[in-house]
Image 1 (cartoon, rainbow, N blue to C red):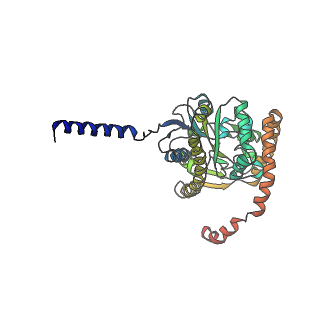
Image 2 (cartoon, helix red, strand yellow):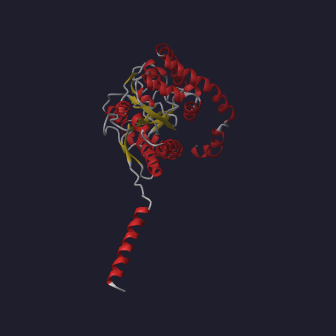
Image 3 (cartoon, rainbow, N blue to C red):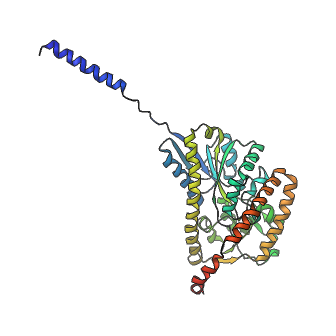
Amino acid sequence: MTEKTTRRRSLLKGAAVAAGAMSAPMVAVAQTTSFRLQSTWPAKDIFHEYANDFAKKVNDMAGGRLKIEVLPAGAVVPAFQLLDAVNKGTLDAGHGVVAYHYGKNSALALWGSGPAFGMDPNMVLSWHYYGGGKALLEDIYKSINMDVVSYLYGPMPCQPLGWFKKPVANAAQVKGLKFRTVGLAVDVFTEMGAAVNPLPGGEIVPALDRGLIDAAEFNNASSDRVLGFPDVAKNCMLQSFHQSGEQFEVLFNKTKYNALPGELKSIIDYAVQAASADMSWKAIDRNSKDYIELKTKDKVNFYKTPDAILRTQLDAWDKVIAKKAGENPLFQKVLDSQKAFAERAGQWQNDYTVDFKMAYNRYFSKKKA
């Protein structure tokens, strides 16, 4: 083989390699969109864990195209400033409850506060997604110039009346109590004669410890235990109508949310639904364990809230909503929508659902005795 032939073959081989490289398909590198989401909960609270659970579902399904970073309450803004921060784009997203925005429009508290015409938390979510609640919430946010996308999820178990230095036996003993709650429950307990202070979650136990308040409610056995309630009070009153149908909210800045491609919006949508179911199951497991720990290790005394106090709550609620509805047409619209849905769904649930206490007491009442 001559030197000329060898050189020619080498040139041809190089040209072929170059041509092959040019004809190979270009592999697109997926760009990662990062969202900062702040919760309204301390990092140690199970509620902040729920925010992490939601974000993980989105991150896992998005395959690197969308990454949500979760921050605890106060990392960027105080808990009660979350809605404004998401609206302005200071935060891309947030995790909290609708009742925390009560100061913007009183109707927002109806997603969580009060007896919801006898609906449990899951039924309230059903009303929201299938009974007109979602459209009403969007109308309210629009009326207060909040440019956000809201997802509700995660039906919370019925919340206790609260933690007390001394348990209350009747409605008269509620009068004069310095009490912490939020949302429309502020108005309910005020109507019952309490002096109410709507403190954020992280400030409640220190205030109770220093005697700035006499009693307080937060949410559930797991949250209450980790926040330190049993360290400053040994009496917890169970069952209440003040927040018996609440749920969580994931907020997104609308401009940043709308810039996402359709498939990433769908991932968020389905992650919300998956997180809602997962949270419900986790709550049953963790709350029941912590309830036992509160009784056995922390020596907390639990009392059922007397029916007389529950009836007084309902009386106070009726007065509060009558006043608010007269002041706010959107408040009345939400009430009318909830009531129509509750009448139908509540009749079905009450007629169809068996009394589970009958079976439970059959197998466990002797053990407890």
